[in-house]
Amino acid sequence: MSDAPKIAQKAPYPVEVEEGKSYFWCSCGQSANQPFCDGSHKGSEFAPVKWEAPASKKVFFCGCKHAGNAPLCDGSHAKL
Image (cartoon, rainbow, N blue to C red; front, side, top):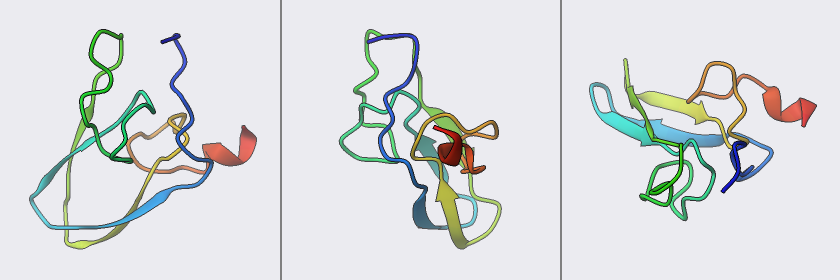
């Protein structure tokens, strides 16, 4: 694995989240369970990012792994 994360997809992942629930976003791009961690980062410098839902709603998790406000999409994929 290199220093840069693998781009899982150049679009966000829409997910219905539950208020108060914790989600572990994949930061390496290797997970088969995108956008969430499945442990594929083991042995690399990457680690999952814990995010707690402030409300039950649809959010857009970053799919390109380059968002400035990870784990949520900020449109960075449009510049890749």
